Amino acid sequence: MNTDAFATELAELGASLNSTLNQTIATASPEVVEDAIAALREAREFDTIERPGGWLKRAIEEQWKPNRVTVRSQLLFNQWFPLARAQGIAIASTQTEAGELLVFDADCQPHPFPQMLARYPLETLQTQQNLHLRRLHETDPSSTTIAHKSAMQADSMDRRPR
Image 1 (cartoon, helix red, strand yellow):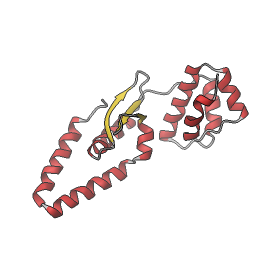
Image 2: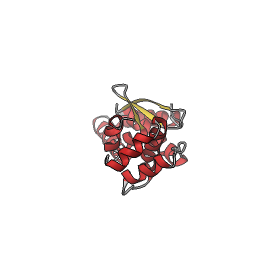
Image 3: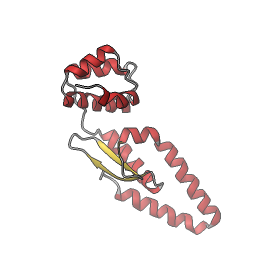
């Protein structure tokens, strides 16, 4: 199999394509490699992987598959998505058959949720939302209550991925 197809994705995950990893990828099926990459992406969401290339090699050799979406990930998504949508960062989401959460950006391009979370951390979105509400309150104190109620309604409607 051609490793070039995975080069960009592996670089984003911090895995260098050395001769050992190239050989491992070349001898595995595309499905096994894709599952291993998804497992690495998922593992990086919750932990620091010191040697992503070595981790990926073992995942390919042992045919690891990603876990389904975890409760922690689901709760985090439920906090993150309404803020991202309100700020124009995300327009929709879905969960793949493999259990991976995908977020569609403003250009309708799908991205794995962990990638979007890394790019737009929850704390940053919360800070931006708070600044926005503060500015609204400064210009019209009654608008803060309306904006806050709208945000709360959006949040209560987004308790599950799309």
